[in-house]
Length: 226
Image (cartoon, rainbow, N blue to C red; front, side, top):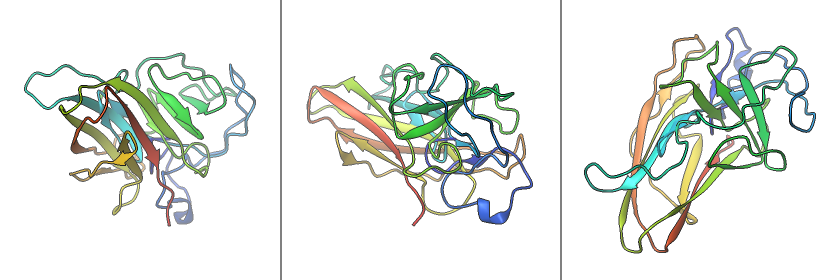
């Protein structure tokens, strides 16, 4: 359910379902049963992120560091590998539906609206590791999900941000990234997912910003199609 536009979890879905937003799972999911308010789960889409590198549509790897060689990683859980993974249930064991008002299962992140966190998915290959997030949530839920994390920064210091993303459509990005409310211009092109279990390619998107405060909130917001 990758952060923004995402990949579709299964093949054979109607073309109409392949909207510009994150892709959805092409299947019907039961109500979530474990550790969350019960919610209908019809179609899922996701993304993966790692060390301050983020996936669009599907976020797989995100990272943020001081713009210098061998700088330390500042983003916690940029690869979406850590947290209290609570499967949706009803036979769905690889996806966790997280909402802004429910338990915050992803270590280091605050979720807004809703998104899906996937671990070792059978229908799509993550960029690396096992985790990813899909910002489109269940059934291309609008408004799409968001991820927020606040890091310590030094005023005047330049920081480098990068993220790996894949989408089930070509063209505009399916998400936006902000640093303390200021939109970051991302360079690069997201990858593409052809709906096959191993068909997702990931593109790296990068940006830099100068910190204007001693703390900086990194925000990733899924963008619905227009």
